[in-house]
Image 1 (cartoon, rainbow, N blue to C red):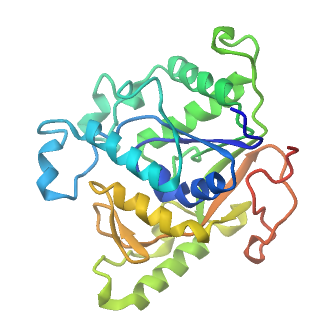
Image 2: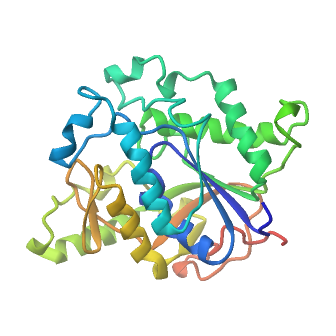
Length: 299
């Protein structure tokens, strides 16, 4: 990897990367940074919203995972991301499904993966790519999905292990990641999105969400450290969302998953710095937040 700036995004399923970090990824690609995506499962348990593809489902042909590889490739082409990888190889770990479902007990479920083995696969990527920045989820995985929680565990342990010369020297030279971020959405932004959806009226067919306070992925604004303004790339993000057609419906500036709850497509994406020193405050939407994941790092 020869680019001066390198960032690794660790996500659980195809489509997670686009929903939460797609605009950021497109921005850094456009700026010449090396952007690597590491996805932990194929999303085999996803709910299919395209009726004619329903037979791909886990309880029928169980071919959704393979189909979603194609969706992910198309989405990353829309964002300009070329370095796309799966943890341990495509299909090594299976989508664990939501909490309390039978999918949790599948022998290949990511939730049941041997952590040392999974961390080793992630360390191999970190030591090869040598990112200054790693992006993943918070300890709850954003909303409690087992695979998101496990992706957090693997990413955080891999960052630590990659810097340890005693850990699997066969995987390459040690590498110290300078900054780690957890993706998030400030409550104020969720509120703004809900107001925009309400103002759109009947022209947007999605259901309206309930109380913002009940949104599991929303965090207090004071926990946010970084806002990446990638509004110039929101069109690419929307195109990437459309590529994930089995999972996402897009209508103008809004989208919905299988629950049909409308959300606004964000051109600015938000993060919490949890490892490394914060850079100088940027525009930060009036909050004095960083405006660059690489802020404060030397070239």
